[in-house]
Every structure is written in structure tokens, then in C-alpha cells.
Length: 161
Image: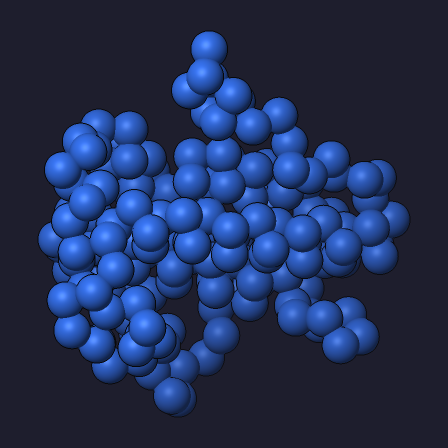
């Protein structure tokens, strides 16, 4: 998850300006993708810490909410990432084994209920890499060079060192 968050942030930073605007063809707008990952990251902060989900994120989940701009989505992602990183870095094996969603929650897939924080983190990390790839494809379409995903995976490789 540490690498997923780092690489997603790197791809967001590298996305050229045309990719930060509206949709290109049938691809999602870059800001929508960043918000989607922000939503997942904000929920992970809540699951890992037991705190409430970021109110800014919840406001944008309302059926009548206006999609956030790329800069707003990016700022929210930066906040969520900054909150999640220390939680992940300092978690114990017991905390990773905890079940933060004992019963289905409205708006979340029902199959997540009863799973451990460790499972949720692994699933969310994979999901974030999917969207990093989506932004990387968008970047390529607007003329950026290959963004080199999955990246150097420093946190993953560092665990075995």
C-alpha cells in the first residue's frame, strides 16, 4: 500500500495539463480518477484509525454533488495519503488482523464486511495501481513519456532487505 500511494502520487504529479481537464474519449477525466482513489484512501484512513471519513469526501459522494476539479481532488488525495501513511507504517500485526467492517455499510460492497484490515489494504493497493495505470494511459494519450509503472517499489523491496 505504501508503494501504491507513492506511485499514484507520482503519476498524478506527472499527468500533463490536458489530462487534468475533462474526459478524453471514453476515458474518465483525470480529476474523477483522482477523486475515486481519494475516496478509497479516505475510507482506508477511517478503517485504519476508527475516525470519521473526511467530510469533504462524503460531501462529494452525495447524488447531486458536482464532481471536484483536478486540483481539489489532488489536494484531498494529498491529505488522505498524509493521514494514511503513518497509520500503515506504525500498525502492528494485531491491528492488521482487526476486522474494521464487521457488518455491511451503506455504499460499500457487501463482500468487504468481515474482512481484515490487512485484506482491505491489499485490495485497495491493487485498486490504486489499476487507477495509476489508467492515469498513465491518459498521460500517454496527451503526449507524456511512459511513466514507468509500477515504479521502483521501494517499500515492498525494503521489507525483504
